[in-house]
Length: 345
Image (cartoon, rainbow, N blue to C red; front, side, top):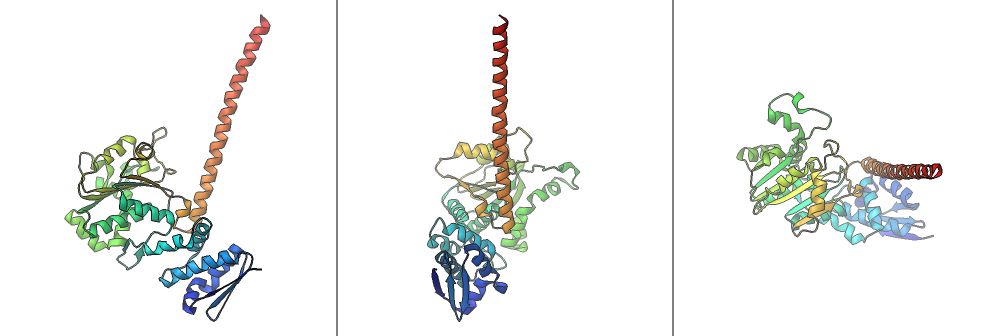
């Protein structure tokens, strides 16, 4: 039976082990090993002890940086260690984007998120496509605020299509701005958290931060700006083309969306899907895809997304089989009629 030994300070190991040793119990179950902590020395025994050792060393590395150790981190690190090196996974926490007004560090938490952030730094236009909870919008907002603070751009423009998901704008109270505000609320929330309400309000008054529906972008040229188009799966091809052709000199644009949550009328093609297909391979444009492995919300969200993906794949296979069966039945019916005519002759 394999055995491994790790030396670490007691206070660090308390963070890694978690309340009532819940983290370490989860790792024991994950790898089928036994882990014992005595006097700053962690002993690991079992067939997969070397795998557990790599994971725990990564968690110690994160704990020393003051990061919280939770089940989401454990799951993600264990999955990535099957495909990449501990150095690649451990480098995530060193990629600091900015600090929130409360002093919390904003960093990419997965390799997919890190690739997305690096793409934003290098390219003029970046598409961030992926399921809910992968940090597409939040990271884009953090990058926009960082660029603004570093004087890389003169203003931030945040926009969304005001598509109704089962509700009608006309029934909401207030004027047009009050009607569209609920659609823009997630953008406001991210700005409040990162910048603080007072700083945000002050910059809004100056006009250097603008939050508006996509329809307000028509006819404008957006120079020296960091532009974030959120919920882009709900744009039409015409709206997407209109938006992309607004981008001016010194500007950067990030377009985010989830292609599994399209609220457009049936039969209407998503502008996000079309643009990703047309623009792929153009220099200065990056099409970045995040997956359920990049989900940073509650671990159940990752499982829900995976379950839905499997259901959609199964549904698509059944529809293809049904379509093939229908074609075969029609062909067989024609053959039967043809044989009948031959027999009558």
